[in-house]
Length: 97
Image 1 (cartoon, helix red, strand yellow):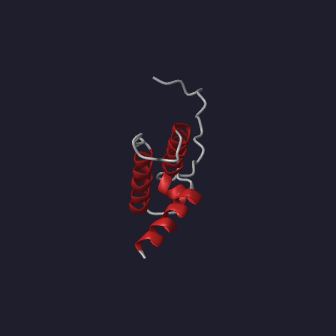
Image 2 (image 1 turned 135 degrees about the vertical axis):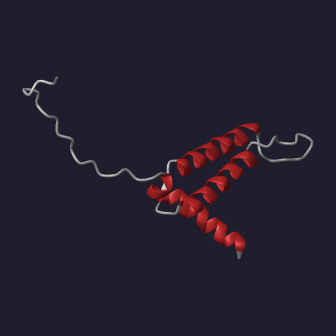
């Protein structure tokens, strides 16, 4: 049996945590998923190897830096950064017009 002398612990009311990065970004989950896929496509495109036979002006260091920026872009979207998501949505709207 439990002793009656034990103090009861009070559970503080906890505000419900937001559902995910889409909530932090202020968009619905479907929109966030579309933006995330866009960011991932940009990252994968940035990782494509440079064809050394072409007279490409980009240096390998530039290509690496672009890959780092693309990784940061995906990370920002996955963390629900509202500015990054808004920027990608604007870019999507411009390319659709």
